[in-house]
Image (cartoon, rainbow, N blue to C red; front, side, top):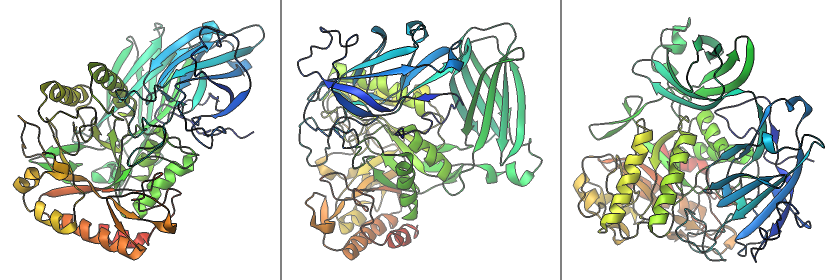
Length: 587
């Protein structure tokens, strides 16, 4: 049987030996919440099956039930490969929405809260060393109507409508295992310093620190090895810096901007890291990085010290049949290829923490990404804790991807609906800005995209008005920040514009009812030709502005009832995509 989503799930820290646990699992709804009392983690009620990693709401799961089921259970049997028997066994989950309890052979292994981030556990001590067969059971809680949970576009009603879509409950990214030795590399952090020509490596070691522990780093560019370095490791946390600029024998490869990462030239450096105790190999991993700098200088957005105009498309990251989970890796890659075919140089991943394999292809193909958190809908102190805790893990997970150029923890005052005047909610938005800065100084942070900004490195404005209105609104920075799209002020009370780059981070939303399906959008046209013409008008209105430094068009694809995509939900073009590219290429 073919295992779904069988690609390696963690592209920035790759090991050769691993075991994919996707595929058919036993599954049960627990609507009466009796599973714990009945100890299903020891005696699972067989009957229903589900195909992991697809949520029960999806067709690809084999269940396809969109009704509320707030507690669900999973179970499967697995064995550890014979060659792993002397190793530690690490169990990984890419993402489980929302709270999960994992049991091995009836014993608790790990608890995790947060529907968007990975977690893992050393399960070696829980394995059955006699029969070789082990039970893996997962209990999941996903409160369907709790609006203080970071849920993004997942609707808290059973039937999706307007801008909200069908929920995703439970496992929705890959489950997998890998063996580990007594010491292993647990965390990698790449920080490019292009002005010096250096790449900084931070890494952490989990496990023992033997006296002869050392790390060998090999870095290659265009198949030429340019760094070979061996470090004696004496601490769990370590930091190294490697100069790259003067290492290559081919100066055309590595000297100057020809080796920077950009959407036009997505140059990547390949890395092999080997951890040894003397001559014994304890760990070997493969990674990569891009030499890329994002900065704001005198109010201008810069990529690698040059002004860069961002032509983004809003990407919800939903797929027919799989919802938040792409049916295969090719679907993630195809979305990027289609966007680039239309002349977009990036995407804002809207209200979704995207699969790392999407970010891998963005790195490889050259595609800018705004990393955005899935927000709650209402504010509470508990909602603030949930968002802050999970966002920290999002930034940590995705820090190494050169494609990510902006962090966006909050959108359109979701979860902070009274931020315009409420001091507590303003403090939360501001704290999310500073929290992000405290763990990543290399990227701009936009604390509340759309309007009602507190502190932000970018002024992001959402405006779905006509081309004529847009052209008038953005003749100057003063005019831009005095507008009130959706009857919202651009800056919250007590905060003001400080010369940040201004981008229109949502606009358009032109609905086209291809094949006469019912649906919704911000405006509507009747033909594919009309769609192209309306796109031309509204986009060229932004090109005329002397102050706008980029845009994000709504949106890449239709999603369920929302039909304002340039592509259908099935990724079929609604118009001649080359015409969209011609328009985008004018700037």
